[in-house]
Amino acid sequence: MAGIADVISGGEVFRVLSEAFRVDVGEYVVLVAHSLSEGAFPVLVSVILSQNTNDRNSIKAFLTLRERVGVRLEDILGASVDDIASSIRVAGLWRQKAETIKRVAEHVARLGGEDFLLREDPFRVREELLKVKGVGFKTVDVFLSVVRRAPVFAVDTHAMRVALRWGLARRRDYMEVSRALLEYFGAERAEEAHRLLIALGRRVCKARSPRCWECPLASYCPSSSKR
Image 1: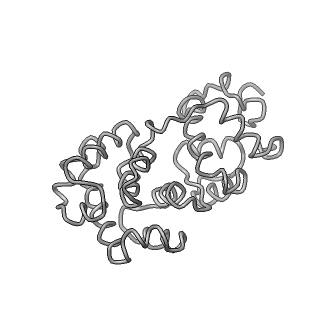
Image 2: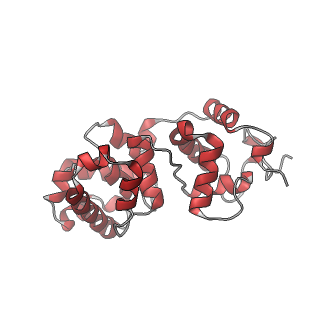
């Protein structure tokens, strides 16, 4: 069965999705953190908070942490895990995330702090951050795509589901799907395309009972019930 790439280009899909879905900065914790312009590290904190929870709760947790403790590298270094944890309960897995945030702060500080995050080769940054317990590929790739505009494609559950339904990848493997999406959309569109796939997955291409009749790409999708 032909995949979507056989019938429509990534550039055209990007255009269709951009016209169909409005992306509001206030709906994504990483964009909220980035818009506050307090440096690179707070964005990394926001992505950790978003793990296994929705953006609504992670935004609340980020803003509460920012108010009570602070989200800059020096704020986290000076705070206890308990201080961090008590501020982020709404994000779920709060103790685990607090420990991860503290560990990543200490690791980044040893490597040079904000300068390391902003000036080091992005793939070296990726390699180092992945050494921290609790930090995975998706967390790092979201951070690098937003802060560094690096040529990576972050894959969450929505992007994974859509890529498989589109036939861009054959198995549920992070690196395979990430490479396929990056190649399909191109590095210059990767960060925005990631958010558009989230919007598509949340509103239309749901895990159960996808709303194919509402999908602007139904006529191209090999998994669509409309074909």
